[in-house]
Length: 588
Ligand SMILES: Cc1cc2nc3c(=O)[nH]c(=O)nc-3n(C[C@H](O)[C@H](O)[C@H](O)COP(=O)(O)OP(=O)(O)OC[C@H]3O[C@@H](n4cnc5c(N)ncnc54)[C@H](O)[C@@H]3O)c2cc1C
Image 1 (cartoon, protein in one colour):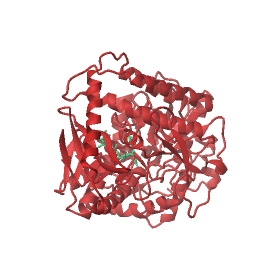
Image 2 (cartoon, rainbow, N blue to C red):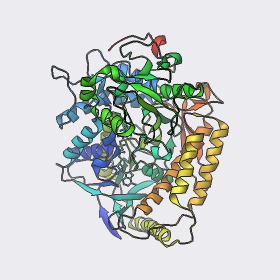
Image 3 (cartoon, rainbow, N blue to C red):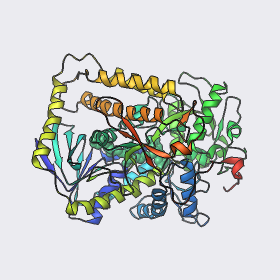
Image 4 (tube, protein in one colour):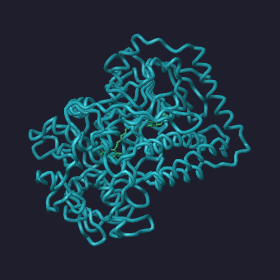
C-alpha cells in the first residue's frame, strides 16, 4: 500500500481545515501538511453559508455583550472559558480575513457593515452580501495556495484514524479516482470534517455532511459531547431544505402564520413592531423560533403543503433595492425553488435540521483525549454553542479554533514520537481487508438507500424539535436494527473508479454511529434545555443536568453515557429572556 508522510494531517478542507492548514504553515514553514478532503475544497459546506460571522467591531458593542448573548443563547451549557476566548479572538480573525481579501460588505463611509442576527442583542454580524461562506472559503483557499508546505489530497476519502497506545499517528484514505487505499503517516491529525445534518432526512446540509470524522474519532475512543442538541433553522425551503438565511429576518423580514399574523409575539418573543427588534420576535434564537412553529402547527395555524406544513416569510416591505443588494441569493433561491419572488410574494418556509451543537469532545486547544488527535469546526465540540448555537457564531468558531488547534499541533509535533511501523501497517491492512470483504460480499440482501431512509425518517419522527421517552426509544430501536442490518450490505457496484456506492456505504456506517450517540444521549438527558425539548421533562434541570453528556463508543450496542462539568466563570445560570420581558428595546 502506498504510504504518504507529513508532520500534520488535516482531514477536511472546509473553513476549519483551510484555516488550520494556513495556521500551521504560518507557525512553522518546515512543518509539512497533508490536507485531505473528500471533495475539492471549494465544494465544502462552508461555501453554502449565507448570513455572516459575528464579531465585536462597533463602538456600541462590547466583548462582554457577545459573551453574554452566546452563553445565554446556549442555555448555560457553554463552557465560558471557551466562549471568552472565542469572543476575544474573533474580531482579529475577521480582520485577518479582510487582509487576505475577504470582500466584507461596507457601510457608505467604507467601514465594515454589520447586520442583526437571532439571539444577538446588538448588531455584530459581518457579512459579504448573502454569500458570506462562499467569500470566506474562497479567501482561505486562495491564501492557502501561497504556502508550499501545504500538500493537498483532493478527493481522498478518509476511512479510519490510526491510533496506537492512545496516540494518533495517521489515517487511511481511499483515492476516489482509483479506489486505491493509502496510508498517511504523521505525528498529529486535525479532524475538520464538518457536521452530520444528513442523519436527518430534511436538512440544509450538503450531501457530504455525514459525520465521518465524528464517527472515526468516536470509534477511536474519543467521546462525542452533547450530541442530543440538534439545531433546527426556522426558515428552510419546503421540499429541498435549502436555507433562507437568518439575514432575511435580520434585514427585517416577518414570519406569518396562515392568518397573516406575526405569531411569535404569542411565544414570549414580542412585541411586534415595524422595525427589527433585536431582543425579540423574528430575531429570537433559533431553538425558540422552531419550537414556536411546532406549537403553531399543533394549533392548526400553519399552511399544509405536500412538503409538510409551512409558514410564510414576508420580505415584501423591504423593497427590491435592499433585497437585490443584501439578499440576492435569497431572491434567486426563492424564485427558482418555490416560485416565489420575495419582492412581491410571501415565501413558504419551515424548520429544517441545520447544525449539530455536539461533536468530538475537545479542550480549548482543540485537543482530544487521544494524544496528537485534534478537532475543529462543526465536527468538534469545544462547547461555545452549548444547547443552542447562535446564528453567525459557527463561521467564527472554525476560524478561531481551526487556527488554535493548528498552533497547538505544531508545538505537539516538535516532541511527539511517531507511531510504530508495525502498528501502522497492521491497522492499515485491517482497513484494506475490511474494504476487500465489502467488495467480495455477494449474499447481502440489504441496500444502503433503504436503510438510510429508514434511519433518517425515524430520527425526524422520534428525535425532532420535541421528543419524549417513547419516541426516542422507538428511534433508538430503529437505529439499532439498522446497525445490525448494515452488516449485510453488499456493494452493487464493484468498480474502483469513483465508486459512489462504496462511499455512500462508508458514509452510512458513520451516520449510524452518530445517530446512535445522538439518540441515546437524548434519552439520558431528562430535562428540556435549548434545542433539546422533552415533552415528558419540560423544565430545565440545573441540579442534575448542568453538564455535558459524553457518549463513549461501544462496538456491540448502545454507547455508554457519562457526564462532564460545564465550565462556568462569570455568568451564573439564569432564565433566558427575550422580547418584551428583556426590555424589547429597538436598536436597529
Ligand atoms: C446552508 C448553510 C448556511 C450556513 N450559514 C451560516 C452563517 O451564515 N453563519 C455561520 O456562522 N454559520 C453558518 N452555517 C454553519 C457553518 O457554515 C458550518 O458549521 C461551517 O461552515 C462548517 O465548517 P467546517 O470547516 O467545520 O466543515 P465543512 O465546511 O463542512 O467542511 C468539511 C470538510 O471535511 C471534508 N470531509 C468530510 N468527511 C471526510 C472524509 N471522510 N474524508 C475526507 N474528507 C472529509 C469535506 O470534504 C470538507 O472539505 C451554515 C450552514 C449551512 C448548511
